[in-house]
Length: 169
Image (tube, rainbow, N blue to C red; front, side, top):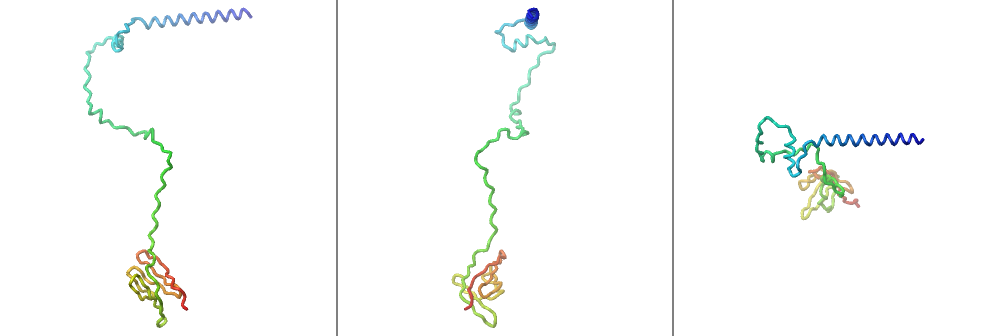
């Protein structure tokens, strides 16, 4: 058991020596021409570059107007959208369909003449005498006159409305 420990130690020592030797050999290769630290980085990079046979070219002037005309790419959409903890607004309510106004007539009385019922209606200071089929005030048509109700149609919307007139006594 002692011989395996000695063998293991000697192999580890040999690996250590080989590693140190390889590291020093690579380090010496890179540091062939050390430059003083006082030189700027651009000069150090130029001194390492191989000599060029071409003449140096002067860079073209930068046109600032062209730089400002760049278009921003929206290819990926809004990467950082703003978030709100408020609930989203409710959708707008659909407007109610138009409805006929309440009947502007008041029942004044009725009369039966030759088997036909005539009804007296009042609106403000006007009195109308109507039977079934008559048009009243331009916007209303009397559809039928019954014993307890008068059915009137509001003509602009074709909506039927009922006016209670009570039972005949």
